[in-house]
Image (cartoon, rainbow, N blue to C red; front, side, top):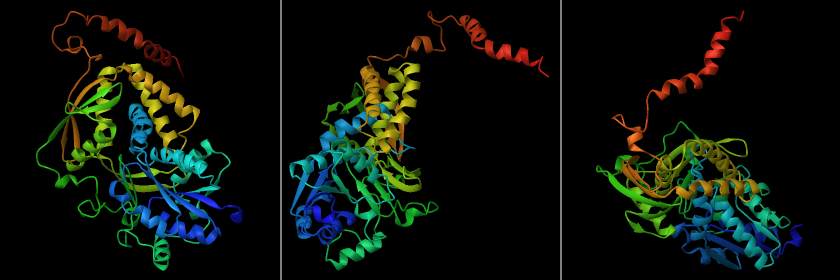
Length: 406
């Protein structure tokens, strides 16, 4: 099979895994051309110098695809509107992978490639997310996953390979965390984090990138107001912003206030538990604001059912099933619930905490007069007696019947 593969499209980040994959492919697929593809989903300076590095290590060319707007509007916003989170994790890597995979297939078709290659390990979730998404658009294309077939067994051995092949790396053995960064988040795994008894070294200036430790956050709170239209955030503090700028702005504000740090042991799709530390400043703020707005704009039954749906939606996204009928059907339901989720949410940020500071909406279902402890004209408290009698009838009947049970 290897001798039939002459052109390979590689998902290329320039990190440790994909840096050594280019020469490895050239060694193991004789005469093959490697076309590197870097998807810009908000990595920032991580993309600097990638073209020179990719070509020096053996790629024939590098595509850098700006997917930031598409990533937010078609992947992040649907998850935000759904309120989807997996065991507290806001899906930063999960919803980026289908966005990237879709573009990989498009470029593979444009280049008439024989295969698509990724650098995901055989222990992780990302291999599933990439490959299910690729299969959705091309069920027949060959997928190469070096981690499942090569003799390299650890990140230390990857560094050995890189040094032997004179491949420059931005990390060393002491800072060799496995990281994934995009507009939405930054994840940290590996090294001391593999022992869940270890506290993350938040105060180490080389650890956090999007946030500061709450201890180093300002001693004064920061207030922000976020405006939503049909469940989608459109403005911060009265200023309308495009999606990319809005998330960048909230990352800046939230990061300075130590907001969005998450340290969890999660249940991976492949069957093991994994410990990770996530920085998600903007995402944490937006989820809080969106949920707060829904408390006054959704009726009780819709809100409760939507919470059930949100968990399933999160599982689907986490498990790499983005391009499936069920995900699309749930998204259609969620979109319908968002027709009245318009308004303003004021939040108070202080040393890692987010507190409600006020919410308004032209579609608010909250009626102050009805809810008031003061005198009102539209709620007869005597009506509660009949309601309780009917609502509690099954309990009363059972209690009476139990007296005759042996």
